[in-house]
Structure formats: C-alpha cells, structure tokens
Image (cartoon, rainbow, N blue to C red; front, top):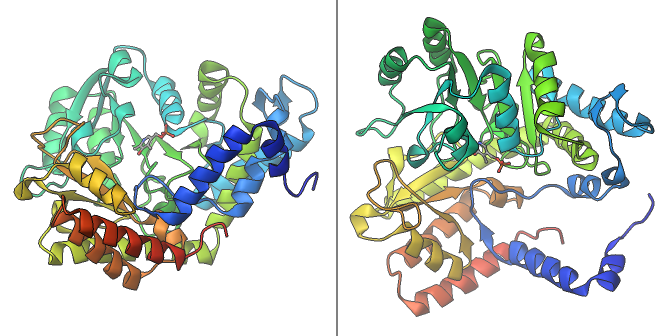
Amino acid sequence: MFNENLFPYLEKTDPEIMDAMRCELARQQGQLELIASENFASRAVLAALSNPMQNKYAEGYPGKRYYGGCECVDRAEELARERAKALFGAQHANVQPHCGTGANITAYLVFLKPGDTIMGLSLSHGGHLSHGHPVNFSGSFFNVVHYEVDRETKTLDYDAIEKQALAERPKLFVAGASAYCRVWDFKRLREICDSIGAILMVDMAHFAGLVAAKIHPDPVPYADIVTSTTHKTLRGPRGGLILCPEKYQKEVDKINFPGTQGGPFMHVIAAKAVCFKEAMSEEFRAYQRQVVANAKKLSGVLMARGFDVVTGGTDTHLFLVDLSKRGLTGKDAEKALERAGMTVNKNTVPFDGKSPFVTSGFRVGTPALTSRGMKEREMEELGALMASVLEDLTNEKTILRTREAAGALAKRFPLYA
Ligand SMILES: *Cc1c(COP(=O)(O)O)cnc(C)c1O
C-alpha cells in the first residue's frame, strides 16, 4: 500500500527502539512462550496495526462522529462490529474498548452506581484484578463479595455460589477468570442471577477464542453483558470487546464513549476486524481444538512425571501446576524455566499459603506455541524438558542443556520468519 516496509524509517529515526524491538522479536522467536494470556497475532493483524488509521480521531460511532473525514475508518469499525456479532451470535458489539479492563469498566458502569455490590471470583482463586480486587478501581468503587473454588475439588461449586449469592444479593455477578482451567456453567449462573434479580456479566477474556470455535460453553445466550480481550486465545490485536443484547446497546455505547474513553484506536479496530474474520475460518477452529488438545497433553505429561496439576487436568487452553508438595515456589520455578528457555508466570494456586510475589505454583498456556504449529508430539518433548528443570531446580547443567533443547524446538517452528 503506502509503504511495504516501514522499518528502515524506524531504524533511521530511532535505532535504540529498533534495537529493543529486534531484541523482543528474537526473544519471541527463540523461547517457548507458555504464558496463557499471550499469543502470536498473524501478519495480517500486525499489518493492520501499523496503518495510517492510527492518525485519525473518530470520537463517536460509525455514521455519528464528532469529527469529519471518518468515512474510511467507519468502514473498518462497521466491519469489526458486524463480524464480532456474527462470530459470537450477539445482537450488539462495541469494539472500542482499549483493553479488557476498559471493557469491564464500561460494563460495570452500565448497570451499577458506586457502592453497589458485585460478586466475582477471588484473584487468588483465578479471578482477575478487575473483578473486585482492592488495588483495582473495581474494588474501590464497588462493594465486593468474592466467591472461591471448592477446597477439595478446586472447581466451582455452584450450590455454594448460589447460597452465597442468596445471602449477599449482589447487584451484578461476574463470571470468568484468568487462571481457572475448567468450563463454566452459564445456564446455572443465569438461574442463580434470576433468583436474586442480579445482572450476569461474563468476562471471557481468556477463553473467547474457544467460544468462537464452539469448543467452550457459549456465554452469549445467558449473559446480560459479555466482555473480552481480543489478544489472548482470540489471537488479535491488544484490545477489548463488549457484546450485549440490543436493549443495552445505547447505554453500552454511551458509557464507553463519552463515559469512560476518548477517541477510539481506529488502527486497532481495523486489526480487530481482521482478527474476527480469521476467527470465522475452519483453520481457526482447528487451531483452537489443537490448543486444548495440547494443554491436555502437556498437563498429562507433567502429571505422569508426578507433578500436581490443579483439578487434575484441564478443559481449556491453560492449567496450573501446584508445587507446594515439592517444597518449590512459583517464583523460583518461573526463574529457572525462563533461564531454560521456557516462559511461564508464577501464579497463586487456590488456598495458597504464599504471597502473590512468591506463590506455590505457575500457570501454563498453549495458545502461543500452538500458533507456531506445535502439536501433541511437541508437548511431550516440552513436558519432558519442563519436568527435568523442575525436578532439579538448581542444577545449572540441566538448565543449560534444556535451554539448548528448547531453542532447537523453537527453531523447528519458525515465527514471523
Ligand atoms: C486479561 C484479562 C483482563 C484484562 O485485560 P487487559 O487487556 O490486560 O486489561 C480482564 N479480565 C480477564 C478475566 C482477563 O484474563
């Protein structure tokens, strides 16, 4: 289009940033990325992100903007909205939220006033900061009641949730999580919410790609409002998304702009449109099935080597390894694995005795490596590498040997090459 390759300009203007960018590209190419919230967007998505629409102010919505010259960006936003609606079977889509947290801010303010009660999964049991954690706006604006997973099964106990909801009577119930590996029963949650007149909000930030591929229960028929990110399993640009029935359309759009945001990022919205188009393909559905198959395989390999996986497996793209019986911390495991060429994040496990900076576990996700084309066979290889590091965390030789093997495995599945 206007320039095949912008990078020579960056190189000339700012070699330091160019260098940092090269460093990051090499890191992504050379390491095994297992952070469950990360993925590798397609070249088409990256191209859309580097697009002159980034220059455009477009406050408002297609056809009703506060600025002139919006006819081209209107086309991009219309495409993004229509595709999101078709992909998820929703009556309305707002594609403007800058991030998942922003989508949640809007969703709350559509239904709540400061001081109202929300009920969300506790952060230490897999929930997200924006589901009512005290350090987040959601924890200071609202009165928060947290539910937790069951002490024995580490899964959601809907009878217990119902009992708590009846006692606390939240005005809004948030389902969805960042570190919960089992599927949600949205129908049951709808019934619970109906019995107390509560709004059901589903934050599908993590599993939106699985929902799009129809391999995860669909929240859209049950929720009053669905929020998401577009950059996790959905594999699009960094950003947020809101889906809702027509009856909330006006309020959602108004709260998002001018209520909580200014000008939308039109280049990101263009990239979201590309992402939704990609997500409608059979190739994408096959990818998501492989993501889950890989997570099941990798967790199985680790369990076979004697590691505790929270809930004994996974239904989704992620799982949690609980190291407490081995006397290891998530912090040390994350560090050793990173040095051995595998990127994970430390994570509290339910009922963790350790602080979020130390933790007793770590979280593993397969979306990114599956985007590189890895399948079950590679998960076997990877699981063996992870286990060998974890079994001998301070053995420098093992770490170095594993680093080489991890690098070789990465090389066999080229990324952006
Ligand atoms: C990642 C995540 C978010 C926030 O997304 P950001 O784009 O980082 O703001 C919100 N909710 C859940 C459940 C998430 O996992």
